[in-house]
Length: 218
Image (cartoon, rainbow, N blue to C red; front, side):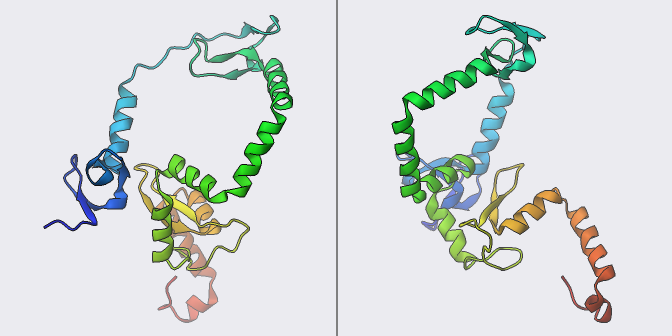
């Protein structure tokens, strides 16, 4: 009998916990048949098979708004256009954005105030967009780590309210929650174990406490 907290992926046939599957209201048990990792691999394969759009390089372009011929550097990039540039120049684009903010000032203020009034919902949107993670999954990890960083074992001491989500950039798999300092440190070391080991050797060389007692580990 399969544990209700576990589910078998239809693609890799591996038994995984329920938080490794994306939610789907019309799916079995409210979850997708494939795990998150297989879903990501499927999306990447689908995107790689799509024919890439060939851009027509140009050094100058006529703005569709002011009708002036300007260098290509005066236009923002746009992946959907034939030349890879927006139809309006940066000056006209900024003018349009300024006019939009003036006309919709009250609406933008209400939207900003609603985000400040409901930080939990804004945080939930960020988790779903960047990590495909539900707030309950984050709380579960937070509880398992007792609210402490998975590396240094300290709570979040910076102005940031939440522990950072550490994930594998190749597969997208969430590894754990880290404080701001440890998360940035991994990024600076390019998540390279060789570099981290060299840094440990370097620190041991100048650490007097380690030299006096070589049995002490990091």
